[in-house]
Amino acid sequence: MQVVIAGAGGFIGSEVVARALAVGLQVFALVRDQTSARWDEEALREGRLVTLPLGADPEIWVNGFGLEPAALWILAAGLTRGRDPQVLHQAHGALTQDLLAAAESLEAERVVLLSCL
Image (cartoon, helix red, strand yellow):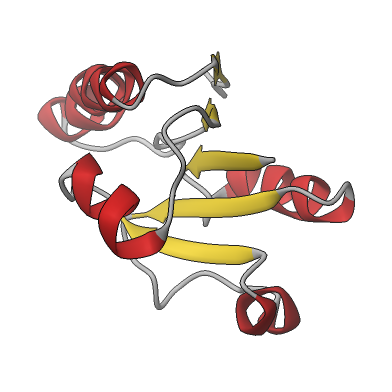
C-alpha cells in the first residue's frame, strides 16, 4: 500500500515516515526542501521511499513517480516556530487546502491531518 506524507522532512512527518516504512508501506514524501531531510538511503534505493516536490502538479506525481490514485494521505506539513503571519497562513491554511484538493483529485481513500498547533 502507498502513503503520501506531506511535511515528511519535518519534526512530526519524519517520524511518520519512519513508522510507515517500518510497517511495509511505500512512502511518497512531499517536502519543501529535499536536501535538508535525513532519508533512509536503503528505502530510497529500493523504491520504498520516493521524495516528491511539494507544490508540483499532482498528475506529475502519478505519471512521473508512480503514485497510485487511491493512496492514503497524511498531512503533517506546517511550521512550529513564530514567523510572519502570511508565511504561517500559507503553511497551515493555503497549503492544507491545496493538499486536500490534490488528494481529492487523485481519489485518495483516506486523508489524515496531523497538526502540532
